[in-house]
Image (cartoon, rainbow, N blue to C red; front, side):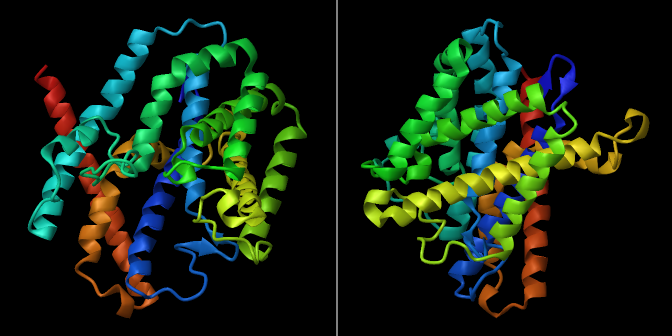
Amino acid sequence: MRTGTRRLFYLDVIRALSAVLIVVYHFSGSVYLSGRWSGVDVLHATINGSWGMTPVYCFFMVSGAALMHRYPAGERLDIRKFYQKRFVSIYPLFWIAYVLGFFSVFWRLGHLYDLPSWCLLWSFIGLDGWVVNWFPTFYMVGEWFLGSIILLYLIFPLVHRAWQRNKHLTMAICAAACAGLFWYHPFPMDIKQNPVVDLFYFLLGAWIEEVRRRYFHRPWAGPSVWVMSLAVLGVWLLFPVTNGLPSMELTYSAQAYGMGMFLRQGFILVCTVSFYLFFMGITVWMEGGKDGNVRLPRLRNLILEISGKSYGIFLTHHVISQLICLHFDLANLSKREILTVLAMVFAATWVMTLVIYRIWQCIKKQF
């Protein structure tokens, strides 16, 4: 991510790591469906429950920090160019990945979904995973996240204007609305798909970047925040503090599951922010070598490569994981064998990601 000529490398670190963790988490779903689960498995959960929403919410936070910094206060937002750039960055790759996924589903099932053809419209505009609770869709590779990020991009000019006028008030209003939805959510969608909740995390990333830019140059600020985030992550991973609360994966509101669900949502928020801040601190260390040199330059290059292809990973990994897992009896594999299958999923996902980017580059050359 760039602001002027300076790249915000910590956003690349968090995006790349979140992409990797989402692949792991969705693979763990296949292991879970095989009936192999027993107790806490690091592929799926910590001692305090599922961690699956943390990397997803971090994606929203990275998007908010990147866009608000790309269009800082005082800079006019050219709406036409903004939408044009978002369209080009989202839809061509999605359509390529969707076509490949469409044929893979046909190959796996031997038939297509028994739905009216007009339902393909939802997939064409990338909202199939978001509207699936209301309408039948050919939902395959988009995931609900894509629909949510498209909606955030659509409203971004209005959000940007409100943020410029009073970022603290905008953040406070969105946080209050989000807390209200944590308490009472009457909509048929999962609460994590609600645009207000996603907007809250989107703005939270932008707000954290504002704080980092203003205060992290002070000698005490960065280390103290990093230590506090490390302490929270230690509790999350090692100490059972949420016994009796609903599962972290049950992201519904409190009126359905009681006060425990409200507390669970707060726990998800604290852990997600701590995860985000911890790797922000790691990035500061990586960029703080002697004479201004970057520590671990090869690792940095790898992170940049994964970050730059994270959208392709997001589009391809789910179908790849399903196809590969069909060929294995996961319930009877050893832990080492399951990790080997996971490595195969990563390799195949990366290859398919490179393929869709290559196809897109070839198409662009024709126009």
